[in-house]
Amino acid sequence: MPSRETARQLWSIALPAMLTNVATALFGIADMWAIGRLGDAPAQGAVELGAKFMLGLLNVFNFLRTSTVALTAQGSGRGAPDAQGATLARAMAVAMGIGALLLMAMPWTIPGGLDLLEARGPLRGDAASYVAIRYWAGPVWLANCVLVGWLIGRRRVRYVLAVEIAANVVHVALDLLLVLVVRWGVAGVATATVSSEVLKFALLAAVVVREGAAREALAALGHRATWTRAELMRLFALNRDLFARTLLLTAALLIFARAGAQAGPVTLAANGILFQLFMLATLLLDGFESAAQVLCGEALGSGSRRRFTAATRAALVWGGVTGLALSGLYALAGARLAGAFSTGPQVIAASAAYAPWLALLPVLGAASFVLDGVFVGAGWTRAMLGTMAVAMALYLALLAALAPLGNDGLWIAFAALLAARAAGQALVLPRLVRRSFSAS
Image (cartoon, rainbow, N blue to C red; front, side):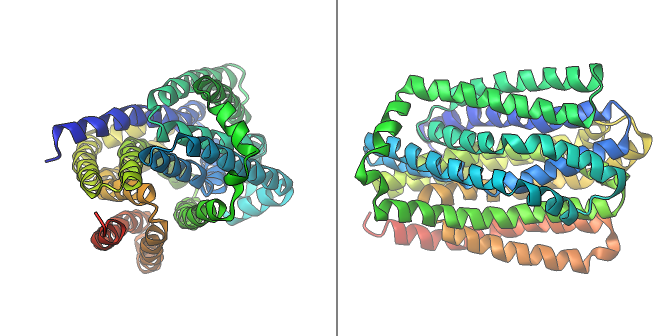
């Protein structure tokens, strides 16, 4: 078992991060619950497709958060506070550049993405309305990734939690008002999400200014050292690998959503509900990923193999225990929880039929989520990309082989993706540790 001190450090980061991620999950859960009160399966399916579209569009840029966590933590481990301001400046510059490109590509991205997801008929119209509203908050979402990553890298997770709770209280209130009272339907769900994202940015920016980081970052913008070739290449190499890896993972999620859409609106809505519950478990387990990023990044920055090994062991042990607990909860109450997100009898029945797969996913995914944090914190992004590529190949092969099983085959393939990712990372981990700490 991990030492008490290592476990304490792990939980001091993981617990606030878990609570923050639960608050984040309320975005999707509140949206699905509110639109589900209308008893309109196509509208609920449209929100699911629109949310998957935005997830696919933006989540590939989540490297802005993860790379910022890793580089900020490594700077802390080296005892180089000036490097943290430079990290924030570089990451925010990249975020704003990507945001501008996304807005310019908007006229082509929305129809192309909906075609890819095979959104047709009334489903397409509602999904397009949802995406057209949420798209404008894309640059804000990117900026929030940077600010959250920077604060987590400095172990300011409690501030992130407070901001997330405040933004989600507003989000849920707007869902209730705009969907159930004003009756804006799909447009109300999208408007609530955009409003809460803008509020989150304002609150995060206020925290960063209070920390003095805004002054550090502004000063770093004018320093030649911030933009040296070595620093930029380090940032882009890290972000390139994380981008490609996230692109593969996002493709897997979009393929999952597309397969559900091909099975009809009822199956799509049921899969969307179960997937939101899975995302809730994922975001809880991601608390250990965030802790591993920070602790392993600090250990690498200080050159301490002992600290690195202790942090990895602690994250795997406690992440595994939490994964088992979540799987047990979903095994006992998964169908009942899923049924609370719809009033349509067909959707409720379909959710209950596929709920057993939901119970399997947390325990399968725990190790891969934790090891993602270890690999990112250490900067082993190329190895993480390679293991993801192998797991993705297995996923695609199983989708083809298990097509006769219908939606059950889809869930089996997705479960195998999680297991394969963890197995691949575990196999290469010892070699990477030896290489990175050969002098320790």
